[in-house]
Structures are given as C-alpha cells and as structure tokens.
Length: 137
Image 1 (cartoon, rainbow, N blue to C red):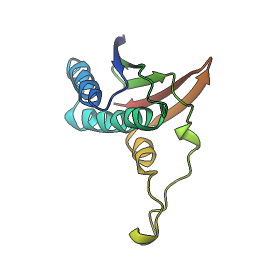
Image 2: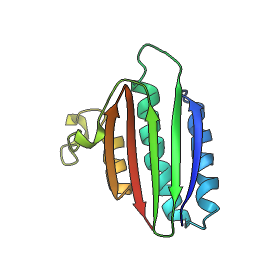
Image 3: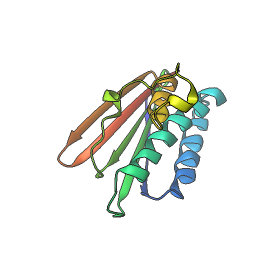
Image 4: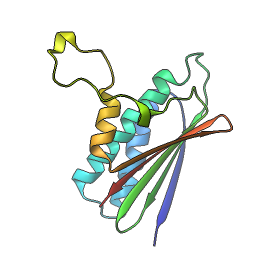
C-alpha cells in the first residue's frame, strides 16, 4: 500500500523550510527513521534550491509541486516546475580530489542528491520538468 502527499509552494527561498516541514511530517506519519528523513530532506532541499535559484532567472514566480509517495519499502519524491530545464542526472561528477582552491565552484548539491538517494530520474515534457528521487527503506 502507498500513500501520496502533495505540496505546491511558490518558488521562493523562504519556502524551502515549508518543503522540509512537509517532508518531515509526511515521512514521520509512516515511521520513517530519522536518518532516512534527514537524507531525503537534504536531497530535496538541494534540488528545490537549484530550481528556485537557477530555474527562474527572469524572476517569474510560479509553483513548484512536491509529491511524496511512501510505501513500506521506499520513498519517492518528485519535484515539478516550469523553470529553465536542467538535468541533474547528466551533470558531471564534482572534483573531490584537487586542492579546494583549484576546484570549480558548485556541483556539490547534485553530488549530495546522488549520494543520499538511491535513484534519480529526470524528464522534461511540455515545458514542465520533473526530477524524481527514490530512497529505499
């Protein structure tokens, strides 16, 4: 059996806290352990922050849809928006070996999403992009 939760939030940085609270409440209702909740929240926070900071360079306000589906064995979170398309699944791995002074700025958010979640999938269709992340429980 699965339970689905949905939140629409305007694409503002202030709403990152709202998204985190939504996830925590939804996952606690299913007794998901604290470590998994933290990992899911961190990955979703990174993805949503990328949408908010980079997806709308024109400053346009629009809703971001967060959908969370919980089963006994997995949590699936989808983030839908109509911002500028960006496929994090095709982003190169960051340089984690060079001296910090020689590294390119950015790229660690996608790295965290990949490390904290078990699956990432991206689709862009009809001017709507969807990032789906799965965490096995």
